[in-house]
Length: 251
Image 1: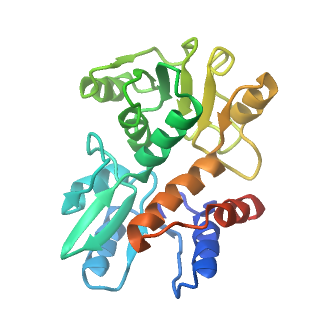
Image 2: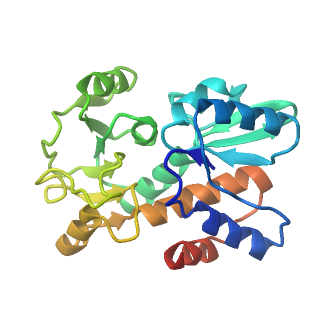
């Protein structure tokens, strides 16, 4: 996995547990990376030195621009988190989109609106995963929020910090990784929360959702879901999700 920061990542533990259970002779490592390291990883993938890799913040947009082709379910094509080499082509995928869409359709099938916090690659993925819901976007950079909305016809910008009643909140910002809370009222007025950040303790947003009895997907559960979809791309078959989730919770 390539990104910055990555020292906190649970992905090596999650994928390592899956490799062990599946009997694969493989290793998954997290590497602090910039665009130059990403470019080198793409070369190594083409040369057969790597079987595949994940990309996390802040390289998801760069990866989307640097791969040879985009696979299905990449939505607007602004964000890639999984890269594979197939039949001479480096292909980028977004398992953020597939994991988010599955969670929304399974847990909030009747909720018609989505409130995306953020404007980076994860926010683009959340908007792409909306499955026809009305999308509201709140970001600290209004220009970036406007660019996201421009390519999603069912989306509109909400000023940062303003709650949207009855929407499922997707926190696609880093807020929470270091104990930061979301703006007041965001969780309280929502229909539930998908909180993408994670850290050594529950984020304030997830703690608030639990206290209010709201449906919740925390960052660890989401990380496992998108990791499982990535494994399906790399190796095929069904990943051992319960083993992966247990490894993540115990790491």
